Figure (tube, rainbow, N blue to C red):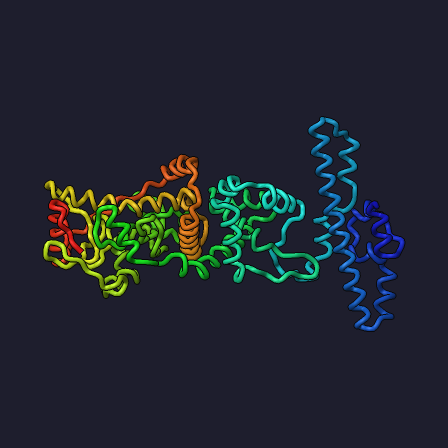
Length: 470
């Protein structure tokens, strides 16, 4: 059915061809004719006139959609002709005069109806998601592209469904929870642009950005309190004891996440390596799982200052974060401690290494502490290799970046708890990206708590003699 036939069928009147309508006459006159339009307006009641106008508008929308489809088909045909070298001058003339452009029609119509914004799936790419990804891909393909198996992915979707599910309309269905989560994971896993992800899933980049933030917020609201948690403290203590450090409840450190320069060019975001960043501080257990995270501090802020301004510091200081479980080391009582690098303060509940010229016993203490503290560095490494968006400068707002960082920590824990394989190829790509944003060196804090010094000295001696007792 050609454009001329379509217009006659829809309107039920004799109208000029769409090719002839390419002139500059008003669009409403093209549809009804000037005399006919005035006659109808004079003889109709207001309600009838309103109905007639709405019918015309809806008819116009049908024509616009038809022309959009025609233009798309013409573009595809032209592309094929060009590839074969068979496009003639006659073909070019046909494409240029085949009817009014869709953009021109829309401009003539004006903004008549406000359409509610929703995230629609582009029908031309439905088969790729529904029939290929969901039905054909095996677990290795899911792991490579979404960083988790299909089973873990579906479980994640079920957990997020209460926050992500949307009501469908009578005309079309909104994006499913599964597709929305897939879009977010695809954006977080490789450092792809929003446009690239949009092309993959058949939608605009703004839709991709909205889907990413919807999923990230749902993860932090529903899963963060359940997945990033201390869990069984005794299991953690036993795990670190097996690695060589007694009565330890975790290792703490900070890492810098690159960001684009803020609009106000705030120098407080510039870290000691000279690039804009935000700090992620995390406490990690013996299995490299996050038990406490704090994201969003400005890159210039020292790790020690970040730590002192967190809820975790206050709970540790009050003695309420861990159970009141002490051991005796060389006649000194020692509570459950966490391990940090020289950037952190030496406290009765926080052990850090000796600095300066070291004797043999101090070197042994540092070795034991460093061996156990490596879990937090490994956790950061796996986090960024899985979700490589954290290795490139995020173009999100300063409000949204911490949400995405925290969501990635949740996804890390979920993958670790499900035993998801960490693919070897991820490391090489992550190392290449990380080379552009080296982690800043942190200055050592010299101040020490007197009781903490006694505990560290007792531990140092016990490591030499092997006499630490519970």
